[in-house]
Length: 331
Image 1 (spheres, rainbow, N blue to C red):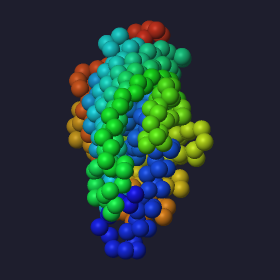
Image 2 (cartoon, helix red, strand yellow; image 1 turned 30 degrees about the vertical axis):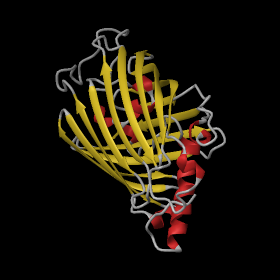
Image 3 (tube, one colour; image 1 turned 120 degrees about the horizontal axis):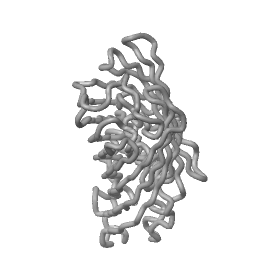
């Protein structure tokens, strides 16, 4: 099956083969619940349910990612998320909807998360979380322009399937200083057995590991390195490292590197105490970089009730009542 890109021969065939290899690698390494984020430090609740109750105030998050511009059928991701901590500062709920499009395949994930946290020491908290939900899969090979429109697969009805997901995670952190998290987005790896889409939805267990630290370089400057590891049995380790600087608790600037894949620039602005906007641009450092104009990602976060919570110097009433992340933009 050949997809028409509108690019002159022979470049269109090189273009198509590169795109095909890249898309296949994406699904082999990141199928089911694993859309790719460059600003992962602001999207922890999307892949770790233990995070949702650790924030100080309720959060609403919106994200849009356009990957590999100029490659037809390249990934597009939209995320809507909510993190809601309870007043007892122990429990939390989260809600996520993620729509991920890649060529003729559209996957929409919906899940509800719950977390419970407690003090390990006076300044260290540990949160456990789990989420339940499912994925809606749609495969429509009639999308696009094909050089061989008579191929049998194009005459099949679109595939529409649902598969359940159950995930869990833990999140260990010290307020405004460091954090470390582990999560498995889905323990149900049976997949959907269909000869045409088995490679897309037949899944292995994914393990995500995230961590970060906040260094106070001065009263107006903070240094925030972070990392994210994605591990799937049988696939190369996906390693992301980043370094951001927070200036005057308002402006963020930095860079990120996805090993053997992409180099990224990041910027963020705290518009007000209740609103944050972030942007990133990825440039592929592999061969695919010669055939696309990079990837763009924008995130918008709203902190509801910001400024009405506990002040930063206020201590919890007892050792049984955990402290929380007072400045969500740090993490």
